[in-house]
Image (cartoon, rainbow, N blue to C red; front, side, top):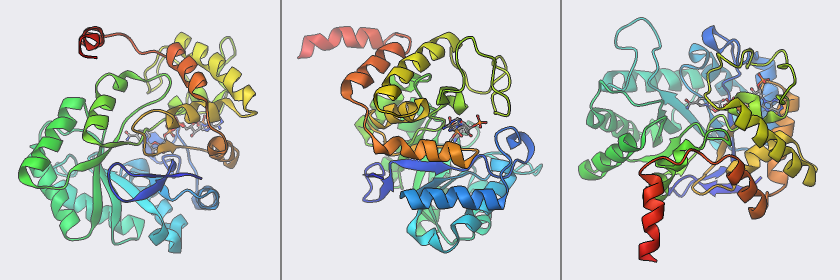
Amino acid sequence: MNYRFLGTTGLKVSELCFGNMTFGGKGGFKTIGELGQPEANRLVEMCLNAGINFFDTADIYSQGIAEEMLGKALGNKRKEIILATKVRAKMSDNVNDVGLSRHHIIEGCNASLKRLGTDYIDLYQVHSYDPKTPLEETLRALDDLVRVGKVRYIGCSNFAAWQLMKALAISEKLGLERFITLQPYYSLVARELELELVPLCLDQEVGIIPWSPLAGGFLSGKYRRGNPLPSNTRITDMQHRFLQFDDEKAYTIIDGLEIIAKAHNASIAQAAINYLLRKPGISSVIIGARTPEQLADNLKTTDWIMTPEEVTRLDKLSEPPRLYPYWMLDWTKGDRV
Ligand SMILES: NC(=O)c1ccc[n+]([C@@H]2O[C@H](COP(=O)([O-])OP(=O)(O)OC[C@H]3O[C@@H](n4cnc5c(N)ncnc54)[C@H](OP(=O)(O)O)[C@@H]3O)[C@@H](O)[C@H]2O)c1
């Protein structure tokens, strides 16, 4: 396992992070995974044995159950690992048990600490933007949690570029903790963030920790053009799936991944994750798994390195739409060389 600095911090994390959205299976998370404690323990142990020291969860995953299970599975290893969780989602019918108010952040943090069985969270992330709460309120509450030692670093997830830039500016102006990481949806079938968010993260030195690197399993190799959808997976219906991407383009990307994977005696899933590890600004890629076999496959990603030429081939196959003003900015860049 290789380790990278988490954003600009002095903290090192494994370049693969394990996300535990498959633990628990309560409510809407049932289709994603229904792992019980023994299976969760096994996956966490496999990660630890492979050198993973970075784990990601959220309060909302199976309504708190996933946090509880992760805390139990980590047991006395907790101090050796970097633990990330999130706040923002609706946790009960109480009108204030949602969002990024000072109230919900402080209560949410205390509840997560209890469920995780720890007295600090290494990376506390806001799960998405809250249009109803001023960013100043959110950042002050997060800063207070850092001051009292309940949280060590703060990060955000699913922010638009203007929202992240505004938050960074407020932190700087008020002398508050700043977001050190962005957790975005990023994969070979979702590269839109390269237009605005990635350049912002590079410029402002915010570490990128992509979620759903396999597009929910679509890039694992078991979905192929012309084949029926596999059974017992979270993607049961291509039309109504959660993640948005162009199916035809995705199948072409999978064909390209297969050629590269074969050249390295690797799997299509490993190639898809390997590609993201080669992209600029990435601190760690958050992998997911529902079975030990899937996890064993994904963990082998770091046994090999995709060549720059192979990355370029995949870049071309998966190029995001050329939107304004980016094509114009590329065109005028030549004036200043
Ligand atoms: N911040 C956010 O809003 C957000 C959103 C989503 C996820 N996340 C984080 O990112 C983590 C990873 O997300 P994700 O689970 O969507 O990642 P993903 O890698 O895109 O999908 C993982 C799923 O793909 C299938 N799979 C994985 N490896 C496979 C393999 N080698 N062969 C065949 N199938 C394989 C499994 O599902 P099936 O067996 O059902 O096919 C597995 O559960 C989550 O646990 C969470 O921590 C964050």
